[in-house]
Length: 325
Image (cartoon, rainbow, N blue to C red):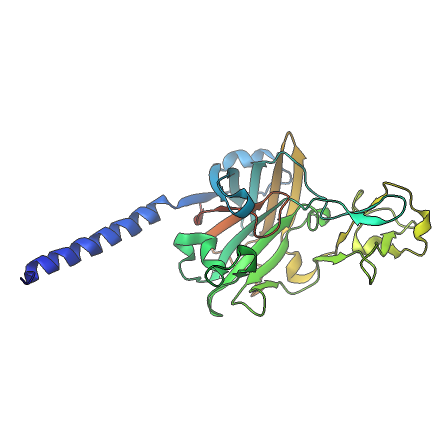
């Protein structure tokens, strides 16, 4: 018995209608961060100007070693005629800034356990297909059944492009900055690229990787007490001068410059949590950065790292940034 044409038409309309309603529901569920217009930007984490910005409590879901766990980040944003500022607050039981630091036991050097705390944001520069509804999930690419650590962080095509802001407690914060990068289609390993300019970090190790190669230059006052910056170093000529339990930075921050230095940061770890402020010009004039137009809305997503590697993180859903008047 053939199905009447009118019934087929009804079923098609019903299916399409359900799909449309599902898309509408997904769109309606996307949260919006409203940036408040202020005459002057905040100069500190506790600046009263933050009271003008409505907080958004953003939920995060854990993956890999954090699978099944939840987190949240209280987020605010304000902007002036030429700058934008974000404030993030989240709970974190441990202040993680080690990133594999060296420790001497009196006979040999070994790496301490521990990584660093981080928060990252990804904005669209050029449209990334499905990013507006699915967030960073569309930037993970890998073979079926492959371990997540073997996936590539990238866009699906070269025409898609993202702006990656990456605050790192051990490697960027000593310079009061967030590492500025961008995302494109995958190369050999990843689609993640550094913005033009200098920055990042250098590994403090000898050629055989058995011990540190550099120490604080005694003729210089440490630029960031407790952290060995690449520009403050001198080569170690006598490892016999070190005593048991002496420690040295392994991942030495390098001074950012050029487009890679666009994002400024202030941070504080206190009372079991982080407070981090990131700021940048609305339009840097660099093609590796998103140029914010305050008349438009922008899709973005965040990731949170708790003393962990890239594939062990907490991820937000897709979000929208809009500018208030």
